[in-house]
Image 1 (tube, helix red, strand yellow):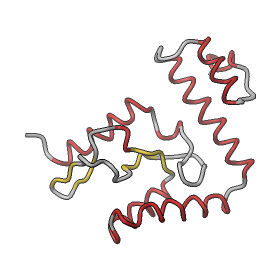
Image 2 (image 1 turned 90 degrees about the vertical axis):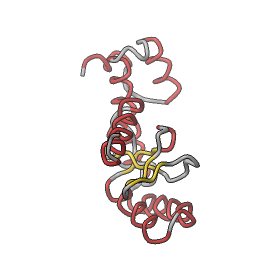
Image 3 (image 1 turned 180 degrees about the vertical axis):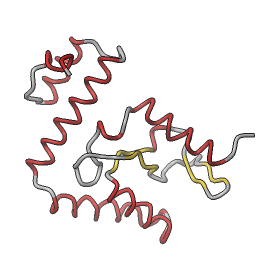
Image 4 (image 1 turned 120 degrees about the vertical axis):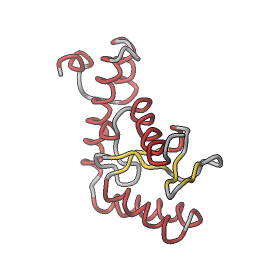
Length: 149
């Protein structure tokens, strides 16, 4: 039987395989560049073994910057699941105050572009779908630039 640590790391690896690197997404709370995928502690079938807690479902992971990931996990360890909604709200509000709208929009455009380049390279979306996504996302960059990177 694999160790809990191995399964925990494998679950996080699956998140990256399915959703891509967290750095291709803005932080869910503050809107700056995310660095890590964080388990949101909402999976009713979560796995806890040998001090490791994770979800087998990638749906329960969110992209966070290191600062917010540490604060969110610290709140969970100290106070449990009951406080996580309030902590998420507080981190979002603090991020809104710390980073202006222009920076958050620039991060959103940049991370969307990275995601789009990755998905196109993997063959998950076509250049036509890229153009349509750029159109609906309001991205200002030309869809043809996606392949140039």
